[in-house]
Image 1: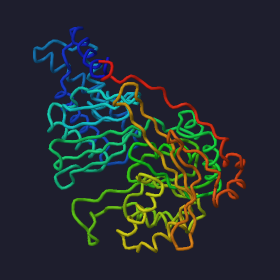
Image 2: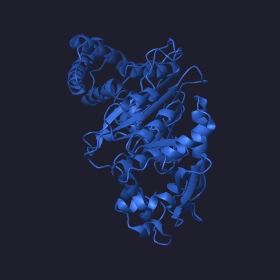
Image 3: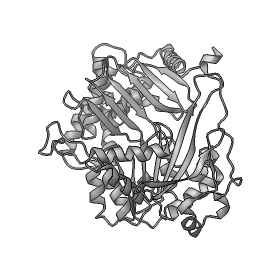
Length: 468
């Protein structure tokens, strides 16, 4: 049974029990009343989220009771206990969660893709794609809900600012677009694997046993590591897993456009500082950027004065490329970042292009990259869910080491290359890495061919199309 069929039957069974549907129009009106009461109670004072939720729970209970009284006064049937509970749940989700989106965020859902209020698709962890119920009564209602979410996070969504990027309470990431698309477009990306270690990734056939030890030693040896790959290939998960190898007493920062790494929430590093970019307003400042905007480039530069041993940049895609490379060359080493690229060598060229867009000549960019980046780890995504028996599999495909070359360009050593199945295997040539990795506790055998072990890839599944 598909997720869509399951949800439809669940709603039908609720109505079969004789319960009148709880109107989302009622939810919106009651939410407005609760927000007004919260604003009046707090009076602009700062309150921690726990206290705000405590007040919200009280106000929700009172407003639902008043809602029931109004129904009776209007001559309508008194609401059942089940109806009141459903309304309280929906009102809580609308105020502190994602409203009608909230029930979609189950453990087995990896991403939610919305192309208009009634075109809702779920991408499951298994790779299956299932259609879900509408998440609003109209496109206008969907935009209104997105604007409410933006306002709760101190952001805006309007004609002047037609895109929205938010970190949600559970660590998921919301991206939305209006005006520049035919209909409101929303994507929710889940971070289901927040507690992964390198050992866990071996069990998921993302890494081989030997590569696990090599990457752990590279982190201990304070090598600067760039993780590359296509979208959704697991770059953030790999960086998060490598960060678990950083000694607990080290002070470092994660720097992101929107919080995704959540290294400050894992409880492993008491000295980690999480930093996030800030959106600007709709007006432009003297520098041509939105007034009040604080980009990753500025945050990285500011972080260099914060007594940090390393920095971890969530994703490099713009002007932050130069200060990131600067941080790698001026610090003690051990920094990490992710970047979209189709190969490890392609990542070097993309970095050069990013530097060139912001005033650095290519020959200088090559020299800086050669001096800054020690390792590029390229992850790959194979998605065969379109065919019968197909599955999705994320794994490391290649690892290269960089060092300054004779002509000023990076000299690239292929430490791991793809085998016949595309998975990274040791070439036996660790290049400039071996001495430092061995001093960091790596047994040399893991750099030699033939000693590596890969777990079996995830079991294949039969796709819905094939079984229908």
